[in-house]
Image (cartoon, rainbow, N blue to C red; front, top):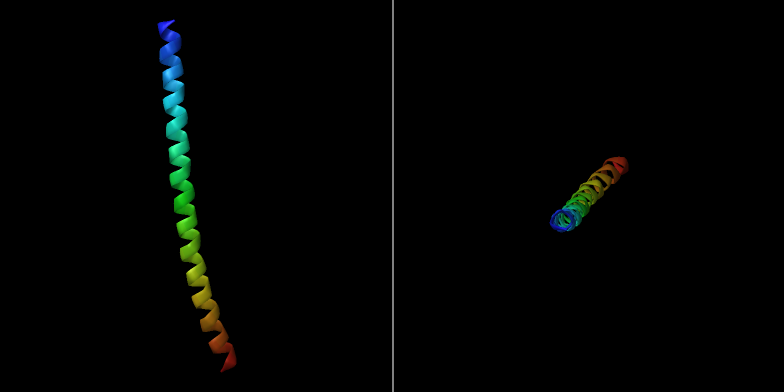
Length: 53
């Protein structure tokens, strides 16, 4: 019985840690995506200016 409780506790802790890690990764991906969008917008504006010349 004790072994089962230890295994269950370890599984729960592992699951919670996995969920937290995924949330952090998703947040990082969203931030990186936003930064890349800003850069792309900047490049598109610069390209439009060059094309007008």
